[in-house]
Figure (cartoon, helix red, strand yellow):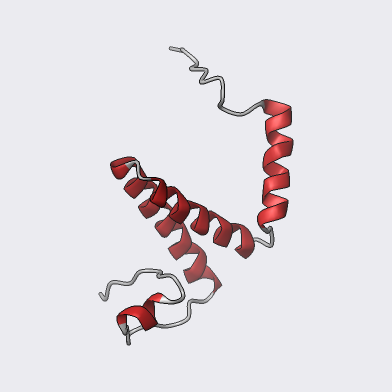
Length: 96
């Protein structure tokens, strides 16, 4: 089975990649979810801020796929933070 990987739009031109195709909706969302995990794993390994930028790019793409865009996503985040809080207090729940 041939391996495949979702790449940023300009990567084929930068690296002269010939073997590419346009994903259908199901393949696209599945590849975005794999890419999200890949980017999270890279951030956990390196702790480099640049990896957070990659995570954001994937999150924005997933959000756009579902018809929610950056402003709306941010509005939803703020609303939830106002209702339930954020993680600024660094609270850890201890449970059995």
